[in-house]
Length: 247
Image (cartoon, rainbow, N blue to C red; front, side):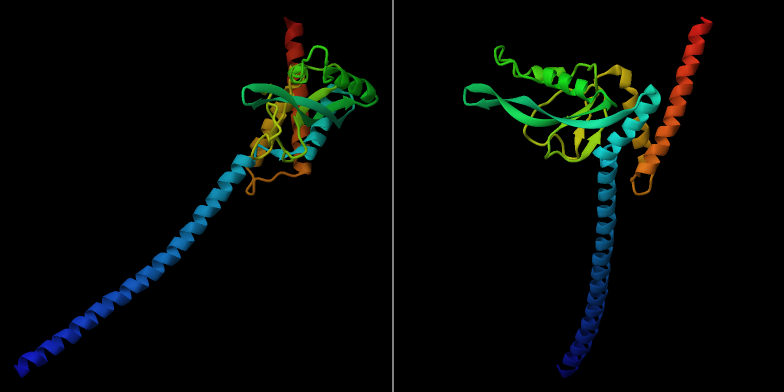
């Protein structure tokens, strides 16, 4: 019996050492796994951030983009334009129980105006967005956002609490709400086809921005792109004129 007991003890110690050895390896691998998981989490988070930055790349700084657009349009139209904001009131439909009614929402209208024609533009805006109480047409202003203007070039409409970022599109649907218009910013509202080239230019700006490592773009870079676009636009327009003349 004693010999058996001794053999059993020796066996047990060996077994314990082997188990302990495996447990040490497991602990080491668990530690390495945690480190790897943290590393992968960092990589995943970095990619998530990049994904958001790519998604936001189409939204440009409002004031900087308006400044560049004013330069772009001035050069193409050969008339000096500058950017202006005017306060307007638009109306959203509110539903309460079985009733609906029009509720005012304060907006700003962003537009370009020729130097010296500020008063004409302001008078046209007041006339366009003035509510005719007798007709009870509270939504007349919203409809006007879809129509080209005579004395100014409409760019966008937005609220003070909207993000200072804008995405440029042509002929967007009109949506009036007291809530924020979008997660990243608001959309332009360019409704005059004569100036649809503004959206074409901004498409090139976003395309350029997506090629940058940090997805950023400076005022200087946007102005450089504007000069290139202006040159190409004029050459293309000149080529079309020559083609028409030959016909």
